[in-house]
Image 1 (cartoon, rainbow, N blue to C red):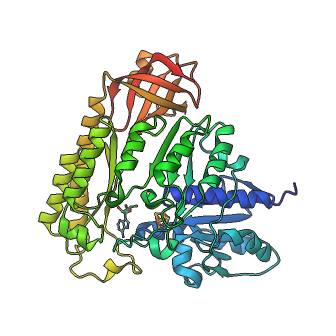
Image 2 (cartoon, helix red, strand yellow; image 1 turned 60 degrees about the vertical axis):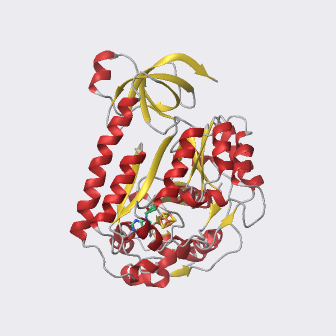
Image 3 (cartoon, rainbow, N blue to C red; image 1 turned 90 degrees about the horizontal axis):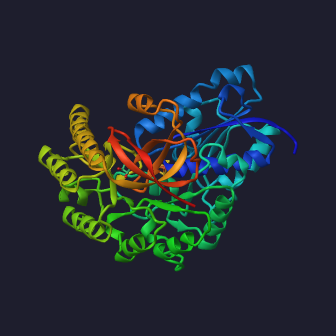
Amino acid sequence: MHYNGYAHIHTIGCQMNVYDSEKLGTVLHALGYQLTRHPEQADIIVCNTCAIRHKAEEKAFSFLGRFAKEKRKNPRLITVMAGCVAQQEGKNAFQRLPHLDLVLGTQAFSRFSTHIAALKSGQRQIVDTAPSDVIFETLPDDTAFAENPVSKFVTIMQGCDNFCTYCVVPYVRGRERSRSWQSIVAEIEILAEKGIREVTLLGQNVNSYGAKENSLSFAGLLEKVAGVDGIHRIRFATSHPKDLSHDLIRAMADLDKVCDHLHLPVQSGSNRILKKMNRGYTAELYLSRIDALRSAIPDIGLSTDIIVGFPSETSEEFEQTMALVKQVGFDSIFAFAYSDRSSAPAAKFSDPVDDTEKMARLNRLLTFQDTMTQKKNEQMTGRVVQVLVEGVSLKQHDGFVKTTPHTRQMTGRSEANKIVHFPSDTLAAGDLVEIKILNAYPHSLWGTASGTVMP
Ligand code: 5AD
Ligand code: SF4
Protein backbone atom coordinates (compact mmCIF):
# COMPACT_ATOMS: atom_id res chain seq x y z
CA MET A 1 0.00 0.00 0.00
CA HIS A 2 1.11 3.55 -0.66
CA TYR A 3 2.73 4.98 2.47
CA ASN A 4 1.53 8.48 3.26
CA GLY A 5 3.22 9.26 6.56
CA TYR A 6 2.44 9.03 10.28
CA ALA A 7 -0.75 9.76 12.19
CA HIS A 8 -1.16 10.25 15.93
CA ILE A 9 -4.53 9.90 17.65
CA HIS A 10 -4.93 11.27 21.18
CA THR A 11 -8.01 10.10 23.09
CA ILE A 12 -9.70 11.95 25.94
CA GLY A 13 -12.77 10.70 27.82
CA CYS A 14 -14.80 7.56 27.90
CA GLN A 15 -14.39 3.97 26.70
CA MET A 16 -16.60 4.79 23.74
CA ASN A 17 -14.01 7.31 22.65
CA VAL A 18 -11.31 4.63 22.84
CA TYR A 19 -13.42 2.55 20.45
CA ASP A 20 -14.11 5.52 18.16
CA SER A 21 -10.41 6.41 18.04
CA GLU A 22 -9.67 2.90 16.84
CA LYS A 23 -12.17 3.41 14.02
CA LEU A 24 -10.50 6.71 13.08
CA GLY A 25 -7.19 4.81 13.11
CA THR A 26 -8.63 2.22 10.75
CA VAL A 27 -9.67 4.98 8.32
CA LEU A 28 -6.23 6.59 8.42
CA HIS A 29 -4.53 3.22 8.04
CA ALA A 30 -6.61 2.54 4.93
CA LEU A 31 -5.43 5.91 3.58
CA GLY A 32 -1.82 4.76 3.94
CA TYR A 33 -0.93 6.30 7.31
CA GLN A 34 0.99 4.46 9.98
CA LEU A 35 -0.14 5.11 13.55
CA THR A 36 2.47 6.47 15.93
CA ARG A 37 2.52 7.09 19.68
CA HIS A 38 4.76 10.12 19.12
CA PRO A 39 2.89 13.28 18.11
CA GLU A 40 6.13 15.05 17.16
CA GLN A 41 6.64 12.47 14.41
CA ALA A 42 3.12 12.76 12.96
CA ASP A 43 1.83 14.28 9.71
CA ILE A 44 -1.74 14.12 11.01
CA ILE A 45 -2.71 14.85 14.62
CA VAL A 46 -6.20 13.88 15.75
CA CYS A 47 -7.60 14.69 19.18
CA ASN A 48 -10.73 12.68 19.95
CA THR A 49 -12.42 14.85 22.55
CA CYS A 50 -14.82 14.64 25.51
CA ALA A 51 -17.30 17.32 26.57
CA ILE A 52 -18.68 15.70 29.69
CA ARG A 53 -16.93 18.03 32.15
CA HIS A 54 -15.20 21.37 31.75
CA LYS A 55 -11.82 19.82 32.58
CA ALA A 56 -12.05 17.25 29.75
CA GLU A 57 -12.93 20.02 27.31
CA GLU A 58 -9.96 22.13 28.45
CA LYS A 59 -7.65 19.15 27.94
CA ALA A 60 -8.70 19.02 24.27
CA PHE A 61 -7.95 22.72 23.69
CA SER A 62 -4.66 22.52 25.49
CA PHE A 63 -3.55 19.37 23.63
CA LEU A 64 -4.38 20.82 20.21
CA GLY A 65 -3.02 24.25 21.18
CA ARG A 66 0.44 22.69 21.48
CA PHE A 67 0.61 22.27 17.71
CA ALA A 68 0.23 25.95 16.72
CA LYS A 69 4.01 26.39 16.69
CA GLU A 70 4.55 23.08 14.89
CA LYS A 71 2.10 24.13 12.23
CA ARG A 72 4.01 27.35 11.55
CA LYS A 73 7.17 25.29 11.00
CA ASN A 74 5.39 22.63 8.95
CA PRO A 75 2.29 23.94 7.13
CA ARG A 76 1.63 20.44 5.76
CA LEU A 77 0.82 19.15 9.25
CA ILE A 78 -2.91 18.35 9.52
CA THR A 79 -4.64 18.92 12.88
CA VAL A 80 -8.09 17.50 13.65
CA MET A 81 -10.53 17.97 16.54
CA ALA A 82 -12.93 15.02 16.55
CA GLY A 83 -15.85 13.88 18.70
CA CYS A 84 -17.91 15.55 21.40
CA VAL A 85 -16.15 18.93 21.80
CA ALA A 86 -15.94 19.22 18.00
CA GLN A 87 -19.70 18.61 17.79
CA GLN A 88 -20.39 21.12 20.54
CA GLU A 89 -18.08 23.88 19.30
CA GLY A 90 -18.37 23.65 15.49
CA LYS A 91 -16.62 26.59 13.86
CA ASN A 92 -16.14 28.32 17.24
CA ALA A 93 -13.22 25.95 17.76
CA PHE A 94 -11.19 28.09 15.33
CA GLN A 95 -11.40 31.10 17.67
CA ARG A 96 -9.16 29.38 20.19
CA LEU A 97 -7.35 27.19 17.68
CA PRO A 98 -6.84 29.20 14.47
CA HIS A 99 -4.34 26.61 13.20
CA LEU A 100 -6.92 23.78 13.37
CA ASP A 101 -7.74 22.14 10.00
CA LEU A 102 -10.78 19.97 10.64
CA VAL A 103 -13.65 19.94 13.15
CA LEU A 104 -15.13 16.46 12.88
CA GLY A 105 -18.41 16.06 14.79
CA THR A 106 -19.65 12.84 16.38
CA GLN A 107 -21.72 11.81 13.36
CA ALA A 108 -19.20 12.84 10.72
CA PHE A 109 -16.76 9.95 11.06
CA SER A 110 -18.01 8.31 7.86
CA ARG A 111 -16.86 11.43 5.99
CA PHE A 112 -13.42 11.57 7.65
CA SER A 113 -11.48 10.22 4.66
CA THR A 114 -13.18 12.67 2.25
CA HIS A 115 -12.19 15.56 4.52
CA ILE A 116 -8.60 14.35 4.78
CA ALA A 117 -8.44 14.23 0.96
CA ALA A 118 -9.80 17.81 0.76
CA LEU A 119 -7.23 19.02 3.31
CA LYS A 120 -4.44 17.36 1.37
CA SER A 121 -5.50 19.20 -1.73
CA GLY A 122 -5.18 22.51 0.09
CA GLN A 123 -8.54 23.22 1.77
CA ARG A 124 -8.41 24.60 5.30
CA GLN A 125 -10.73 24.96 8.29
CA ILE A 126 -13.34 22.36 7.39
CA VAL A 127 -16.27 21.95 9.81
CA ASP A 128 -18.56 18.92 9.68
CA THR A 129 -21.10 18.64 12.47
CA ALA A 130 -23.92 17.36 10.25
CA PRO A 131 -26.09 14.51 11.50
CA SER A 132 -26.05 11.09 9.89
CA ASP A 133 -28.75 8.42 9.63
CA VAL A 134 -26.32 5.57 9.62
CA ILE A 135 -23.94 4.42 12.32
CA PHE A 136 -20.39 4.51 11.04
CA GLU A 137 -18.92 1.02 11.18
CA THR A 138 -15.57 -0.39 10.12
CA LEU A 139 -14.23 -3.85 10.77
CA PRO A 140 -11.18 -4.01 13.05
CA ASP A 141 -7.86 -4.10 11.22
CA ASP A 142 -4.41 -4.94 12.60
CA THR A 143 -3.94 -1.45 14.05
CA ALA A 144 -6.66 -2.28 16.58
CA PHE A 145 -4.66 -4.91 18.48
CA ALA A 146 -1.56 -2.98 19.45
CA GLU A 147 -2.81 -1.63 22.80
CA ASN A 148 -4.53 -4.58 24.46
CA PRO A 149 -4.24 -7.99 22.82
CA VAL A 150 -6.81 -9.62 25.14
CA SER A 151 -9.73 -7.30 25.78
CA LYS A 152 -11.63 -4.89 23.53
CA PHE A 153 -14.50 -2.41 23.70
CA VAL A 154 -17.31 -2.78 21.18
CA THR A 155 -19.85 0.02 20.87
CA ILE A 156 -23.32 -1.47 20.36
CA MET A 157 -25.37 1.71 20.38
CA GLN A 158 -24.88 5.43 20.01
CA GLY A 159 -26.46 8.52 21.51
CA CYS A 160 -28.84 8.81 24.42
CA ASP A 161 -32.53 9.61 24.96
CA ASN A 162 -32.48 9.95 28.73
CA PHE A 163 -31.80 13.68 29.07
CA CYS A 164 -30.36 13.72 32.57
CA THR A 165 -30.31 17.45 33.30
CA TYR A 166 -26.54 17.65 33.95
CA CYS A 167 -25.51 15.75 30.83
CA VAL A 168 -24.28 16.96 27.48
CA VAL A 169 -24.37 13.53 25.78
CA PRO A 170 -27.84 13.75 24.12
CA TYR A 171 -26.82 17.11 22.64
CA VAL A 172 -23.42 16.06 21.34
CA ARG A 173 -24.05 12.41 20.48
CA GLY A 174 -27.65 12.71 19.33
CA ARG A 175 -30.61 10.34 19.76
CA GLU A 176 -30.17 6.73 20.74
CA ARG A 177 -29.57 4.21 17.93
CA SER A 178 -28.57 0.56 18.08
CA ARG A 179 -26.29 -1.35 15.73
CA SER A 180 -27.70 -4.57 14.29
CA TRP A 181 -26.82 -7.66 16.31
CA GLN A 182 -25.53 -9.34 13.16
CA SER A 183 -22.95 -6.65 12.61
CA ILE A 184 -21.93 -6.64 16.31
CA VAL A 185 -21.49 -10.43 16.30
CA ALA A 186 -19.53 -10.31 12.99
CA GLU A 187 -17.16 -7.77 14.54
CA ILE A 188 -16.70 -9.85 17.70
CA GLU A 189 -16.02 -12.98 15.62
CA ILE A 190 -13.12 -11.14 13.96
CA LEU A 191 -11.84 -10.01 17.36
CA ALA A 192 -11.99 -13.59 18.66
CA GLU A 193 -10.07 -14.88 15.64
CA LYS A 194 -7.36 -12.33 16.40
CA GLY A 195 -7.02 -13.64 19.95
CA ILE A 196 -9.33 -11.28 21.87
CA ARG A 197 -10.86 -13.16 24.82
CA GLU A 198 -12.95 -10.44 26.49
CA VAL A 199 -15.33 -7.85 25.05
CA THR A 200 -17.00 -4.93 26.80
CA LEU A 201 -20.23 -3.94 25.06
CA LEU A 202 -20.75 -0.19 25.21
CA GLY A 203 -23.77 2.08 25.09
CA GLN A 204 -25.10 4.99 27.17
CA ASN A 205 -27.96 2.76 28.29
CA VAL A 206 -27.45 -0.82 27.18
CA ASN A 207 -30.74 -1.93 28.75
CA SER A 208 -32.62 -0.26 25.93
CA TYR A 209 -30.52 -1.96 23.22
CA GLY A 210 -32.65 -2.65 20.13
CA ALA A 211 -35.79 -1.12 21.69
CA LYS A 212 -36.31 1.47 18.96
CA GLU A 213 -35.33 -0.87 16.17
CA ASN A 214 -37.66 -3.48 17.63
CA SER A 215 -34.93 -6.08 17.28
CA LEU A 216 -33.21 -8.33 19.77
CA SER A 217 -33.23 -7.23 23.45
CA PHE A 218 -29.97 -6.69 25.30
CA ALA A 219 -30.36 -10.04 27.08
CA GLY A 220 -30.80 -11.61 23.61
CA LEU A 221 -27.66 -9.88 22.35
CA LEU A 222 -25.69 -11.20 25.33
CA GLU A 223 -26.74 -14.72 24.36
CA LYS A 224 -25.60 -14.20 20.77
CA VAL A 225 -22.22 -12.82 21.88
CA ALA A 226 -21.82 -15.67 24.37
CA GLY A 227 -22.15 -18.01 21.38
CA VAL A 228 -18.95 -16.66 19.77
CA ASP A 229 -16.16 -19.25 20.08
CA GLY A 230 -12.98 -17.92 21.64
CA ILE A 231 -14.70 -15.18 23.66
CA HIS A 232 -14.35 -16.19 27.32
CA ARG A 233 -15.76 -13.10 28.96
CA ILE A 234 -18.37 -10.45 28.31
CA ARG A 235 -18.70 -7.17 30.18
CA PHE A 236 -20.97 -4.24 29.44
CA ALA A 237 -21.52 -0.60 30.36
CA THR A 238 -23.55 1.39 31.12
CA SER A 239 -26.78 0.19 32.68
CA HIS A 240 -29.39 2.69 33.77
CA PRO A 241 -30.94 1.76 37.15
CA LYS A 242 -34.44 2.68 35.96
CA ASP A 243 -34.26 0.14 33.11
CA LEU A 244 -32.37 -2.72 34.76
CA SER A 245 -34.72 -5.61 34.05
CA HIS A 246 -35.19 -9.01 35.67
CA ASP A 247 -34.46 -10.50 32.25
CA LEU A 248 -31.04 -8.93 32.26
CA ILE A 249 -30.30 -10.01 35.84
CA ARG A 250 -31.34 -13.55 34.83
CA ALA A 251 -29.16 -13.45 31.71
CA MET A 252 -26.19 -12.31 33.82
CA ALA A 253 -26.78 -15.12 36.31
CA ASP A 254 -27.34 -17.78 33.62
CA LEU A 255 -24.63 -16.96 31.09
CA ASP A 256 -21.24 -18.13 32.39
CA LYS A 257 -19.31 -15.85 30.08
CA VAL A 258 -21.00 -12.69 31.39
CA CYS A 259 -18.79 -11.36 34.20
CA ASP A 260 -20.19 -11.02 37.69
CA HIS A 261 -19.75 -7.29 37.70
CA LEU A 262 -22.08 -4.38 37.14
CA HIS A 263 -21.46 -0.68 36.78
CA LEU A 264 -24.71 0.94 37.89
CA PRO A 265 -24.45 4.73 38.17
CA VAL A 266 -26.54 6.07 41.06
CA GLN A 267 -25.41 9.75 40.83
CA SER A 268 -27.00 10.77 44.17
CA GLY A 269 -28.60 9.31 47.28
CA SER A 270 -31.13 12.14 47.62
CA ASN A 271 -34.55 11.69 46.03
CA ARG A 272 -34.98 15.44 45.54
CA ILE A 273 -31.66 15.69 43.69
CA LEU A 274 -32.37 12.52 41.66
CA LYS A 275 -35.61 14.13 40.56
CA LYS A 276 -33.86 17.37 39.59
CA MET A 277 -31.37 15.25 37.67
CA ASN A 278 -34.30 13.60 35.83
CA ARG A 279 -32.96 10.15 36.65
CA GLY A 280 -36.34 8.42 36.81
CA TYR A 281 -35.76 6.40 40.04
CA THR A 282 -35.55 6.91 43.78
CA ALA A 283 -32.78 5.84 46.15
CA GLU A 284 -35.16 3.13 47.43
CA LEU A 285 -35.69 1.73 43.93
CA TYR A 286 -31.93 1.74 43.34
CA LEU A 287 -31.34 -0.16 46.58
CA SER A 288 -34.00 -2.71 45.68
CA ARG A 289 -32.26 -3.33 42.34
CA ILE A 290 -28.98 -3.88 44.22
CA ASP A 291 -30.77 -6.41 46.47
CA ALA A 292 -32.16 -8.23 43.42
CA LEU A 293 -28.69 -8.35 41.84
CA ARG A 294 -27.05 -9.63 44.99
CA SER A 295 -29.63 -12.32 45.54
CA ALA A 296 -29.28 -13.58 41.94
CA ILE A 297 -25.46 -13.23 41.83
CA PRO A 298 -24.11 -13.26 45.41
CA ASP A 299 -20.48 -12.45 44.49
CA ILE A 300 -21.28 -9.65 42.08
CA GLY A 301 -18.77 -6.78 41.96
CA LEU A 302 -20.49 -3.39 41.95
CA SER A 303 -19.29 0.02 40.87
CA THR A 304 -21.07 3.33 40.40
CA ASP A 305 -20.80 6.97 39.31
CA ILE A 306 -21.62 9.84 41.66
CA ILE A 307 -21.90 13.56 41.11
CA VAL A 308 -21.40 15.78 44.17
CA GLY A 309 -22.40 19.42 44.36
CA PHE A 310 -25.26 19.32 41.85
CA PRO A 311 -26.98 22.77 41.92
CA SER A 312 -28.82 23.31 45.24
CA GLU A 313 -27.52 20.07 46.82
CA THR A 314 -27.59 20.70 50.60
CA SER A 315 -25.13 19.16 53.02
CA GLU A 316 -27.96 16.91 54.31
CA GLU A 317 -28.59 15.70 50.76
CA PHE A 318 -24.90 14.99 50.34
CA GLU A 319 -25.07 12.98 53.60
CA GLN A 320 -27.81 10.90 51.98
CA THR A 321 -25.38 10.09 49.17
CA MET A 322 -22.73 9.13 51.74
CA ALA A 323 -25.28 6.93 53.52
CA LEU A 324 -26.26 5.15 50.29
CA VAL A 325 -22.63 4.55 49.35
CA LYS A 326 -21.98 3.11 52.83
CA GLN A 327 -25.09 0.95 52.68
CA VAL A 328 -24.30 -0.59 49.27
CA GLY A 329 -20.57 -1.07 49.87
CA PHE A 330 -19.36 -0.62 46.27
CA ASP A 331 -16.14 -2.26 45.12
CA SER A 332 -15.23 1.01 43.45
CA ILE A 333 -16.78 4.36 42.60
CA PHE A 334 -16.16 7.12 40.09
CA ALA A 335 -17.01 10.39 41.78
CA PHE A 336 -17.11 13.80 40.14
CA ALA A 337 -17.68 17.40 41.19
CA TYR A 338 -20.66 18.73 39.23
CA SER A 339 -19.48 20.71 36.20
CA ASP A 340 -21.73 23.20 34.39
CA ARG A 341 -22.27 22.31 30.72
CA SER A 342 -23.91 25.22 28.93
CA SER A 343 -26.03 23.03 26.62
CA ALA A 344 -27.41 20.94 29.50
CA PRO A 345 -30.49 22.23 31.40
CA ALA A 346 -28.86 22.16 34.87
CA ALA A 347 -26.58 25.03 33.79
CA LYS A 348 -29.62 27.26 34.34
CA PHE A 349 -30.52 25.84 37.76
CA SER A 350 -30.23 28.19 40.74
CA ASP A 351 -28.16 27.84 43.93
CA PRO A 352 -24.86 26.52 42.61
CA VAL A 353 -22.70 24.84 45.24
CA ASP A 354 -19.41 26.69 45.60
CA ASP A 355 -16.23 25.04 44.40
CA THR A 356 -14.58 24.71 47.81
CA GLU A 357 -17.65 22.97 49.21
CA LYS A 358 -17.85 20.69 46.16
CA MET A 359 -14.23 19.66 46.60
CA ALA A 360 -14.72 19.07 50.35
CA ARG A 361 -17.69 16.77 49.58
CA LEU A 362 -15.76 14.98 46.85
CA ASN A 363 -12.79 14.38 49.16
CA ARG A 364 -14.97 12.98 51.93
CA LEU A 365 -16.63 10.58 49.52
CA LEU A 366 -13.35 9.44 47.97
CA THR A 367 -11.65 9.01 51.36
CA PHE A 368 -14.55 6.87 52.55
CA GLN A 369 -14.43 4.77 49.38
CA ASP A 370 -10.66 4.18 49.68
CA THR A 371 -11.30 2.49 53.02
CA MET A 372 -14.23 0.52 51.57
CA THR A 373 -12.20 -0.63 48.55
CA GLN A 374 -9.39 -1.80 50.82
CA LYS A 375 -11.91 -3.61 53.02
CA LYS A 376 -13.53 -5.27 49.98
CA ASN A 377 -10.09 -6.30 48.71
CA GLU A 378 -9.18 -7.76 52.13
CA GLN A 379 -12.39 -9.80 52.09
CA MET A 380 -11.02 -11.52 48.99
CA THR A 381 -7.99 -13.03 50.75
CA GLY A 382 -8.16 -16.81 50.97
CA ARG A 383 -10.65 -16.99 48.10
CA VAL A 384 -10.11 -18.40 44.63
CA VAL A 385 -11.01 -16.13 41.71
CA GLN A 386 -11.05 -16.65 37.97
CA VAL A 387 -8.53 -14.36 36.26
CA LEU A 388 -8.10 -13.49 32.60
CA VAL A 389 -4.36 -13.04 32.09
CA GLU A 390 -3.46 -9.75 30.38
CA GLY A 391 0.33 -10.03 30.32
CA VAL A 392 3.50 -9.38 32.29
CA SER A 393 2.97 -6.97 35.17
CA LEU A 394 4.80 -3.65 35.04
CA LYS A 395 4.39 -3.24 38.77
CA GLN A 396 6.21 -5.49 41.21
CA HIS A 397 5.23 -5.18 44.86
CA ASP A 398 8.09 -5.59 47.34
CA GLY A 399 6.44 -8.70 48.74
CA PHE A 400 6.50 -10.43 45.36
CA VAL A 401 10.13 -9.63 44.77
CA LYS A 402 10.99 -11.18 48.15
CA THR A 403 8.86 -14.29 47.79
CA THR A 404 9.25 -15.11 44.09
CA PRO A 405 12.33 -13.22 42.91
CA HIS A 406 13.04 -15.31 39.82
CA THR A 407 9.53 -15.68 38.49
CA ARG A 408 7.71 -13.38 36.07
CA GLN A 409 4.95 -11.33 37.69
CA MET A 410 1.83 -11.54 35.60
CA THR A 411 -1.29 -9.39 35.72
CA GLY A 412 -4.94 -9.91 34.89
CA ARG A 413 -8.44 -9.12 36.10
CA SER A 414 -10.97 -11.00 38.16
CA GLU A 415 -14.58 -11.27 37.01
CA ALA A 416 -15.41 -8.47 39.45
CA ASN A 417 -12.85 -6.36 37.55
CA LYS A 418 -10.17 -6.30 40.25
CA ILE A 419 -6.53 -6.23 39.14
CA VAL A 420 -4.79 -9.44 40.23
CA HIS A 421 -1.01 -10.00 40.16
CA PHE A 422 0.57 -13.45 40.44
CA PRO A 423 3.86 -15.20 39.68
CA SER A 424 4.02 -17.51 36.67
CA ASP A 425 6.54 -18.46 34.02
CA THR A 426 4.11 -20.50 31.97
CA LEU A 427 0.86 -18.54 31.69
CA ALA A 428 0.32 -16.15 28.81
CA ALA A 429 -2.04 -13.31 27.87
CA GLY A 430 -5.47 -14.71 27.06
CA ASP A 431 -5.32 -17.68 29.50
CA LEU A 432 -8.06 -18.06 32.08
CA VAL A 433 -6.67 -19.20 35.38
CA GLU A 434 -7.83 -19.72 38.95
CA ILE A 435 -5.85 -17.69 41.44
CA LYS A 436 -5.92 -18.05 45.20
CA ILE A 437 -5.77 -14.57 46.69
CA LEU A 438 -3.11 -14.20 49.39
CA ASN A 439 -2.64 -10.43 49.80
CA ALA A 440 -4.82 -7.35 49.36
CA TYR A 441 -3.53 -3.90 48.37
CA PRO A 442 -5.48 -0.65 47.89
CA HIS A 443 -5.67 -1.07 44.11
CA SER A 444 -4.87 -4.70 43.48
CA LEU A 445 -4.78 -8.26 44.78
CA TRP A 446 -1.95 -10.76 44.81
CA GLY A 447 -2.14 -14.52 44.73
CA THR A 448 -0.86 -17.75 43.24
CA ALA A 449 -2.28 -20.02 40.54
CA SER A 450 -4.30 -22.70 42.27
CA GLY A 451 -3.81 -25.26 39.55
CA THR A 452 -6.75 -25.20 37.20
CA VAL A 453 -6.13 -23.44 33.93
CA MET A 454 -9.11 -23.26 31.66
CA PRO A 455 -8.73 -23.47 27.88
N1 5AD B 1 -20.64 17.16 35.80
C1 5AD B 1 -20.02 16.19 36.52
N2 5AD B 1 -20.10 14.90 36.22
C2 5AD B 1 -20.85 14.54 35.15
N3 5AD B 1 -21.14 13.33 34.61
C3 5AD B 1 -21.92 13.53 33.53
N4 5AD B 1 -22.17 14.84 33.35
C4 5AD B 1 -21.52 15.50 34.36
C5 5AD B 1 -21.40 16.85 34.73
N5 5AD B 1 -22.01 17.83 34.04
C6 5AD B 1 -20.66 12.08 35.19
C7 5AD B 1 -21.83 11.16 35.54
C8 5AD B 1 -21.78 10.11 34.48
C9 5AD B 1 -20.29 10.04 34.20
C10 5AD B 1 -19.93 9.40 32.90
O1 5AD B 1 -19.90 11.38 34.23
O2 5AD B 1 -21.58 10.61 36.82
O3 5AD B 1 -22.30 8.87 34.90
FE1 SF4 C 1 -18.02 10.00 26.03
FE2 SF4 C 1 -19.90 11.63 26.98
FE3 SF4 C 1 -17.41 12.39 27.01
FE4 SF4 C 1 -18.74 12.27 24.72
S1 SF4 C 1 -19.20 13.63 26.42
S2 SF4 C 1 -16.67 11.49 25.11
S3 SF4 C 1 -20.04 10.47 25.12
S4 SF4 C 1 -18.25 10.69 28.16
